[in-house]
Image 1 (cartoon, rainbow, N blue to C red):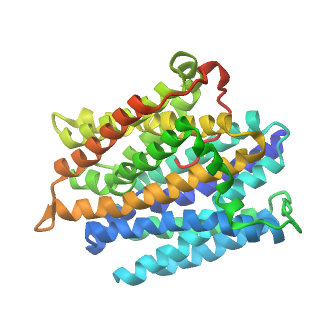
Image 2: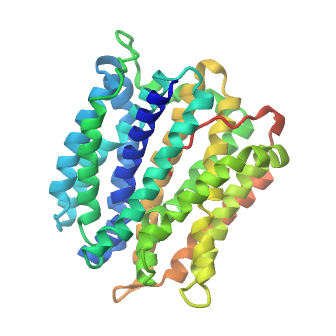
Amino acid sequence: MDSKIYFRLSVMMFLEFFVWGAWFVTLGTHLGKGIGFTNSQIGYAFLMNNIAAIVSPFFIGMIADRYFSSQKIMGALHLVGAVILYLFAGVTTVGWLIFGLLLYNLCYMPTLALVNNISFHQMEEPGKQFPKVRVWGTIGWIAAGLSISFILARFYADVEAGVMPMKMAAIASIVMSLYSFTLPNTPPQNVGKKVTAGEVLGLKALRLMKERSFFIFVLCSLLISIPLAFYYNFTNPFLNYLNMPDAAAKQSMGQMSEVIFMVLMPFFFVRLGVKKMLLVGMLAWAARYALFANGNLESGAWMIYIGILLHGVCYDFFFVTGQIYVDKKAPREIRASAQGFIALITYGVGIGLGSIVSGKVGDAVTANGITNWRTFWWIPCVFAAVIAVFFALSFKDSRGAEEISVDREPGMV
């Protein structure tokens, strides 16, 4: 892959995740503080992202990858998505706004697979070359948070509660759409090939569930994804409740730590191995929520910041390690199917359930419009800790750390 292609793919990845980070991080604050949604309604709004994550593999596997070039359909999806997001940015009716978010996410989520398809098609050694491109996606997410706090906030008061982050995302999506049509051609990979729903959902990987260690891994991946939604959906409203200055920018520190820990993962793999890496990732989620429950912007400010910075451990040690574990456990012929299956379990079903549960919990601990954040954070903390203990006692796998190599790309930032 020459430097010109590397640059073009890096710009593509930067724009792709800039769009996502621009609207996703502050959505909870906009819906709650800006419009007056209840916590349950906020949870259902985020659920639209998870529903789209479940639907998008069908679109990619059964339609996009059989009939259309990746760069063309990605350009079309970003253009339609931009129009939808801009039009629904000013909507305040619960039902209509949630419907608009569903339509938008159905346009956006398939593009996550498309940017990967385009990247892999241009690479001779994806295992070595893809991480260097993918890291620009994380940088794009960080740039979105910094743009909200240090550019938009200069012109709009209480910007995170308003519609401007969504409109910024829509404008960035138009830029991404136009840029997509200039990318190298990536023709459909499965022209004339019959693709079944089972293949799209990765159901071939179900045979791996016969092995106890893999079953425990999948079960714990599903369960631990439920408390994860508490962070993704409600951290920004929590930070704004504390009146943290430049909350969106401060949250991007979590993505900065993700990049650092991604670089350090080979070091930890050699010394800890798969089970301990996964366990540390689960315990990090519990620790993060305990820190949020006890933190404040006075004497406990350090707890809030450490909780945010733990994102690198929380995400890399569990999700990326899990992707690597699946890659090594699955036979080559079903490896892609297995990765699709675990993504469905975590990003689709697990975090989807978490979106509903976190909203219900938020309503349960809210009185007179004020959320008891201390109680709110203790609930996922205990949940994650129990799952970690169960995993520690029940997961056993004969594969050693020496069989693992870190060449998988991260998914959600």
